[in-house]
Length: 332
Image (cartoon, rainbow, N blue to C red; front, side, top):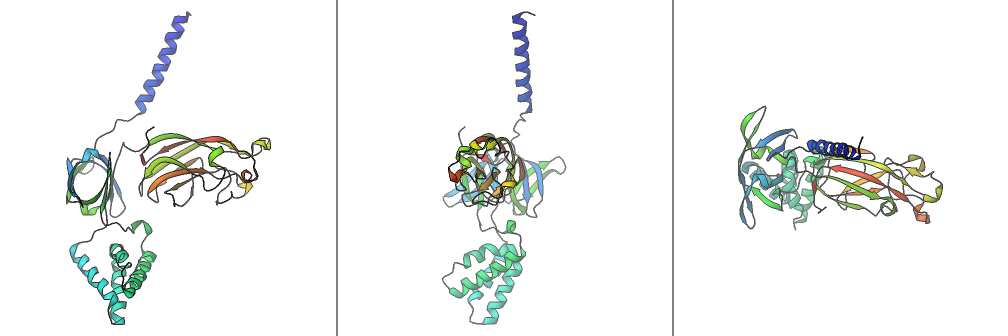
């Protein structure tokens, strides 16, 4: 077979691979969203509403829904319940001990909806009001899941360019699904919306020589996540936690428990770890991680430190990490 034919065949193979790779990329459908309802359930729908009106401290904005990426609804109660809670909070400082006790019980009975006004009351200059408010907050935390306790009353609206803090003025949003057809969603029943097709999909390399030395060194992925964002992380590769150890200290992303716990962590040396936000709780990623984000902020990565690095022993190798979810804030 001539050289020209071989080149032609090679070109066809490469073109075929490229075409197959391109075919895997799903086109972005504008306004295809995942809706999270107040009861925690989720439904996939197509938003038909052309824009939303948002009241901010600087005035009203009209934002096209195609420019939106995420909405997190703040906590707001109906006027009657709000008035009832305000009256009960005033009684936290009542001269009568019985009235103060009764007010605490009433607010605890309200549950999650009382969290925001109680959080604000806990900052009161009246020491008794602040003490009673904190007492009620503790009681509510005991009976209500942490995921349902939010302290933000404003809506958080994330667009393709910036984030808006304010209040959505629309009472309904027009949408449709293959199951329900066209419908009007009651905004008061919504907890959050996430626009699909705009989430980050990136591949990073985390170098052991930099991020497997001590428990304070973290790699900023540039991925910004919100509460309940679905994160999928896959890692592969190998690191050597003591290069001059003859290869006996090599491990993959799950780490090696036979070496105990790494200095400053509760995880085996060499394990791929993550955290969300600078002060976030460390969690194990290993070779695979999939689940909702438990906090908001930047996603950071680290390799659980080598116990021998602090004695001057060199480390080597790296992990390849594929991340799907959240929003990529970096120019790559």
